[in-house]
Length: 272
Image (cartoon, rainbow, N blue to C red; front, side, top):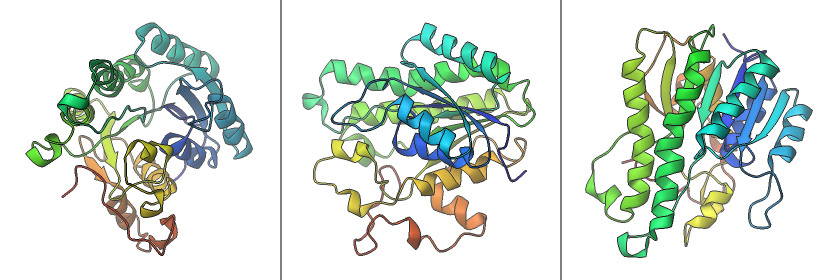
C-alpha cells in the first residue's frame, strides 16, 4: 500500500506543527483526518487552531473533522472517538502527537507543570490508544504511531529535566507495552522520533535554541507516511528515526528539509 486514500487518521495535537504536517501529508492522499486538539480559539503565542488546520486539510484534498479535545479528559477522548466513528465509520490510524514540554531541573519544575506532562504525554497516549483500539482491531491495516524516542535509561537524558524525560519516556514505554500486548493481533504499534530538532513552535520552549538549526516538520510527515502505508503486520514495537525511515524508502537527499541550509543542524534530545 502506498497511499492513505480513504483511511481515517485520529491525530492528537494536530492543530499545528508535526501533527498538522502528518495530517496534511495524509490529506494529499485523500485521507480522513480527525484533528483532536485543545486549540479552538486563536492563541497569540501559538498560531493555528483546530479550525484553521481543518481548512488546510480540506484544501489539501482530505476530509477533516475538527474536535476540541483535551486528552487528559477521558470523557472528551471517548466522545471524540465516537464522533470519528459516526462521521467516518471507524478508525484506521491513531497518531499520538500531543505532548507537553518543560525542560527544567527538579527545583525549577512546578508540580502543576510536572502533572501536566505526565497526564498529556504518557497517560494521554495510553488513553487514546485504549479508546481507539476496539476500532483499530476491526480495521484492515491498523496503526498506532506515537511521537516518542527510543527508550533510554542514560542518566545524561534524565539529569537536566527528570520530569520531561519521565513523561516522554512514558510514551515510549506505553508503545513498548502495547506493541507486546497486541503482537499477533495485526495492529502495528510503533514510535517515531526526529534525528534533529524540528522547526516548530515547541522550540520556543527551549532557551537558546533557534528554529534555523532544525528541519521542517515535513520530514516527520514523510517518515510517518512511509510507516503508515506499510502492512501493519510488517513491523511493530519499533522505535523509528525519521532519516532512517526515509533512507529505507530510497530518499537519501534530505537537504530540502533544512529550514535554513546555511545553519548547522542540532540533534534532538534522547539520541546518541
